[in-house]
Each structure stands twice: as structure tokens, then as C-alpha cells.
Image (cartoon, rainbow, N blue to C red; front, side, top):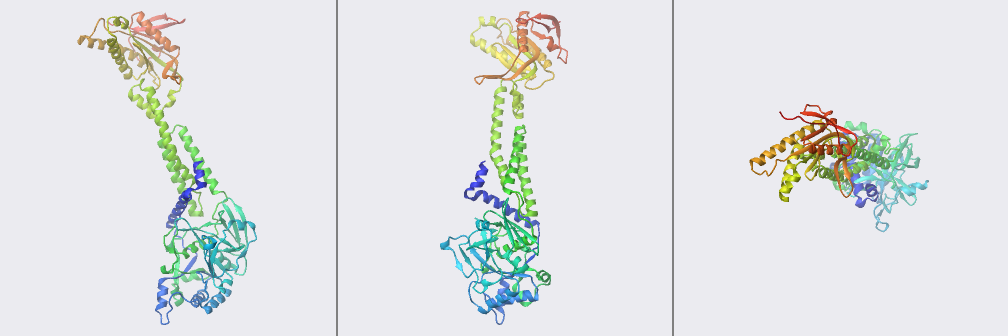
Length: 632
């Protein structure tokens, strides 16, 4: 939604500028790959032609007379049999009357198109006016007056030449960077339409005396002109403009592939033989290209090229008779595809796929989209705009940090919950996998162990509270080391007792074996602990004894509690049975009591002996138990 607003609001032109830069990049890459030679030829009044004409015996300095232009046109039509000539220059003044008459006479017999330009930028009070405009076309459709821009001024030709049959405007539109990127096929002036030079050359070439025949209808991407008979009788030339009547110039031709013939070669009749076939019945621009003539322009392809190259691009595209826009809305279609891409990315995130994979997929989608756009540009000169790329970039800039924060928060929660229950290595494993699903309470079959210090109460009678606290801490740490060694989950300490279980949060097929072996190792650890106290002469009274109960059964395990206090724990009847077995071990003075349910789950042999079924306190059903075999 933010990007939608930005694209519409377009503060400081940033969004449209990004789209234009991408379009320009496509055009630069495309012309480097597609070495297209145009259908159009430029006869250029270059520095060489000006200097050579100046050096002749009766040499002519710049600017040339209109008679000289008339001479050039006569040679092109009569000697080289060109099809049409477009003059990329204004002639607003009346100098050289005979030359003007000669030019008009040629234009009445041959397809010659003169040029004029309009002021679309300055306010009416600041607009420039020079010369006379041609008649133009009467607007027959109301929509035309709403789309094409109204000029505030103009540069025309002198009164004589303004009456010529064919006159086209050479008004271009520069973007914020001073590049010529768009053109208005038609410009309005006093309720009349004036076509651009390239269109007028096609009409003049087909039939200079025949008026334009076109329809103007709404289009998914603006407005569509359907110009008929420009490329021959019965032909239709589609041209889509935006809502401001602008057409993005399709730059297809690298400047090195534009066929340019020096005007001096034409005047001498020395045109290179390889170009003569191009001139015959061809379309020709006559233009001043010398740097000193002031018609050097910046385009997306080059920073400094003759302005006539823009008209070459326009006319070449019109001759290809391709549509410059698809039938569907580029804007809506690109947003739709962009949002489809976002749905895929969010589905990946919600599906538990790691952020690194999502980032990789996002980058590939950006690259793939740009590649697809470039492929479309090469074939059709249009592409879906930059919206999907901006959406995916925004996703990378915004959503990925958010996902990282969420992941860190989840990892912190996992670490906080399990750091008191599991060994550090297992906690790291949980955090790395991001297994937050393990916190959800679920039904599991666990092996549960309760361990209690048997003679703790008697010892408290002749020990200080500090001594009791220290001894308790040492014993529980001793037991916990064994728990961690066997991958158990330390549920809680309860005074001088501990609760441990296996098969949660990680699955352990041998959870019963781990529980029984841990119990046996706990007893060995306490024995070693007593020996250490004896050796250090620190044992007061009887050795420390531990009573252990082990049971296997189904429970609910997960992060249980309330918003005030919660913990990862197990609840259920199996927990109660394990606790009762530990109490029974103390009562019958056995170090370890194991239920039959646990024994049935064992995969290995252990020194256990059956003691029959015993009734446990608070339970109706008797429980079959096993204890350690007496040592021989």
C-alpha cells in the first residue's frame, strides 16, 4: 500500500525516475545486442560538407541559401530517386525569396516535408513565436482535445513555405535529466491538430494530397490511434499514447548504425555505391548535424547526438508497423504480478522456510523479472513497469529485517525456555532450527525420572542452613551432569529432589534406556561424591543417599502455565506414577524402582529384578515394579 501511494504521489519524481532509468538501461543494452540497421537514411549537413562548400571557387559560407537546399532536393529526387525527404530545420524568415519559391515548387511536385515546432514548456506570456504555422487538421473527435497538449507558442516557416502540402512538427519532450524520451504525435493549436514529422513523412510518401484517416479510442494503457493507409492502401498503423498524449520514443538503433551521407557527396553526385540502393524510393532526412549548428541532443543512448537521430528512431518504428503497447493494462498487470510474487514469498515464510532461502528466492525473482522485461522490450518495445521490482526490493528492505527480528525473538524465547532444562548444545540446536512448534503442548510418551536425597531431613538437624544449601546445590549439580550426559530434559528442582524426562522436546526412540541408564549413573555419581567427601574429611554423618523412581507413560508436554508464570513441563498420570515410585523407593529402602512399563520399552539388558505388583499411594491399580539386583 505504501508503494501504491508512492507511485501515485511520486514525490520529487523519484518513482517515475527509477522507472525511466530502468527503461533507458533496457534501451542501451538492447541496441548493444540488436544491431539493427534502419530503413531511413540521413543526408547530413556536417562540418565536412560546410567546409568543402566554403572552399570552392564561388564558395558559399554557412548558413546555406534556400537555393542550395532546393539543389540538394532536386538531386535526391531526380538523380537518386528518393521516396520522400523530411527537412529537420525551420525556415521562419523570408530571406532568399527565389530559394523559397524553388523549395515550394519542388514540394508541390515531390513529397517534401517541412518542419515546425511548438512551445509546450513556457507560459503563454513567455512563449516564443516565429514564422507561420501550417493549416493543421481540424479536430473531429472531442477526446482529441482532452488528450493532446495545447501549445503556447511556435516556430513555423515563412509565409510561403507554410502553405506547403506537408509540414510536421519536431517538438520533443525532455525529462528531468535533459534527455529526449517522449514525443507528442499530435500537438494542439487553436482547435487544430499538428502531426509530428515522422507521421507526416509517411502520409506525404503515401499520398500528400490525402488527409489523415484515423480513429481515436480509449485503451487499457491510455489512448489508441489507428492511422489508416499510412503504409499503403488498406494498412492500419496502431499507436498507443498515455493520458497526456505522449509516446515514449522507442530507441532501437545505435548511432553507429544510422546511415548518414554527407550532403557534399550528394551535391557532387559521389554517393557511395552501397548507399545508392538505400536512397532509391527510400525515406530521407535532410538535417544539420555539425556540432556548431546547435542541434546536439541527449538521449538514453548517447549524451550528445544530432537531433535528427530521434526522428530516425520514430520513423523506423512506424515503418515496422508494430504495436507499442499490449491490450492489457501494464500498470494493473504489473501490480497484480507483483502481489502474486509477494503472496508466494509470504507463503514461504509462513511455511517455515528459512529467511536466507526466501532472500535468495526474492533476489532471483528480481533478476528474473528484469530479464523478462528486457526480453519483452527487445521484441515489443514495452515491458511491465517497475512495480514488481520495487515490491520485491521493499520486501527485502522491510520484511526480511522484520523476519530476522521475529526469528531472534523466537530464538530468545526458545533459549529462555529451554536453557534451564537442556544441555547448552541441545539448546543451540533448538535455536538454530527455530523449532517454536516444540513449545506447543502435545501428547507424548515419555520416560520420567524422579530423584530425591533420602537422608536430607536428618542431616538438616545438625547442619547450618548455609551448609545444607551448599550441599544441596552440589548434589543436584552432580545429578544434572548425568542428566545432560544422557540428553535428558530437566523439568524442575523441588527442594532436594529433581524431575527429569526423555523423548521431549527431541524424539528419542531409546528414551527408556536413557532413563534407566541415567538412574544407574546417578547412583554411581552419588557414590563417587561420597568418596570425595570422605577423602577430604568433609562427610558429616552418614553418606548421602538418593532414591530414584522411573516410569514410562503418556503425558501432555509443552510450554504450560499462564501469562503470569509458565514453564516447559509435563503433566499427566505418568508423572504421578514416577513420583510415587520414587517415594516407594525411599519406603522400601531401594535406590531405584522402575515400572514394568519402562522395562517393556528397554532395548538393552540392565541389572533389574522383578518385585511383583505393588499398590501405590493414592492409586487403585497395582503397578509391577523392578529394582536393582543385589550386588554380589
